[in-house]
Each structure stands twice: as C-alpha cells, then as structure tokens.
Image (tube, rainbow, N blue to C red; front, side, top):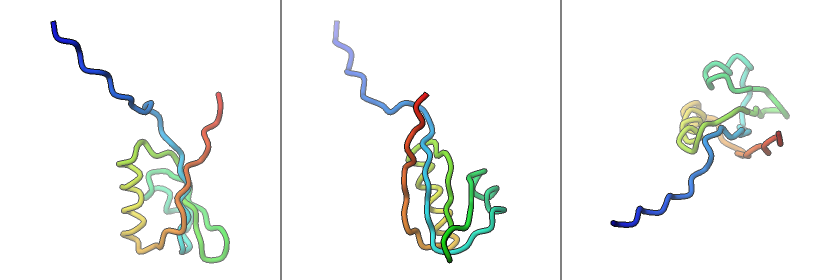
Length: 84
C-alpha cells in the first residue's frame, strides 16, 4: 500500500483586514464600489480604504480597482487580528 502524500500547510479560511492608503480624496459613497469596505478621507489629499479581504487574489482585485481609478497607492497594511 502506497503512503499518502503529506498534507500541505494552508492558511485558515478567514478574512484578513487591510487598510490601503491612496493619494486622492474619495467620498464615503465609494464604499459600495469597494464591496462595502470603509472609505474615508484622511490627511489632506489622502483616503484610506479599510475592510476584510478574503485572500491574496481578492487583495489583488482590490488593488486593481484602485489602479483603474488612477489613484496612487501610498501604503497597504494588514491590520492586526483581534484576539477572541
């Protein structure tokens, strides 16, 4: 009988919260375009888009939407998980 292949290490299936800071002012009404993420203007001329992202593919999709709007990305930060 052949041995079964080892089970790969996989990340738990849970969303990670990211905060993406962009150059440009977005109104909170953009939240629906960003699938319910929080959108708020901060600092003069900057906005932050914050919310849960399912996986790396979804993160790239979010960054693509930002690119398509022509907004320069200042930073992308993973928010610390809250301990339960």
